[in-house]
Amino acid sequence: HEPSKLDQEMYAWILDGGFSGTVIATKADKLSHNKRDQGIRLIRQGLAMSGEALLLPFSAEKGIGRDQLEEVLFHQLKGQENRKEAKA
Image (cartoon, rainbow, N blue to C red; front, side, top):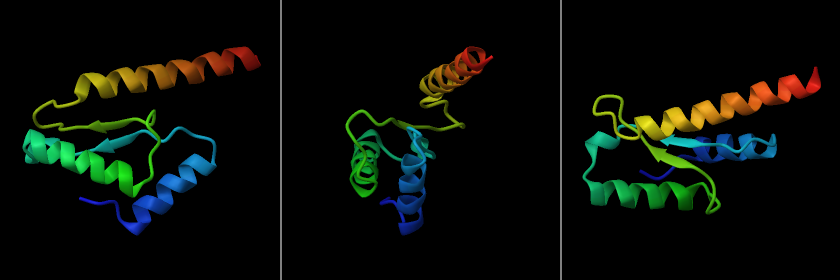
């Protein structure tokens, strides 16, 4: 579904704070592959996401997107760890 006004405001707030704002589209298992692609386009358009911004379809129940999400989280946490070490 299209992002709500609150979704749009929260995404803008995250970007304004200097963060990258990875979007996790949950309940991906509830949609067919075609509907999922349509939903991703609606979300990207509704949030005015740049081409390089991450949007990950995800389903905890069926494991859709789990590997990608783990990889993104690992790299983000590793980046934080590296920044802390550089400050010390």
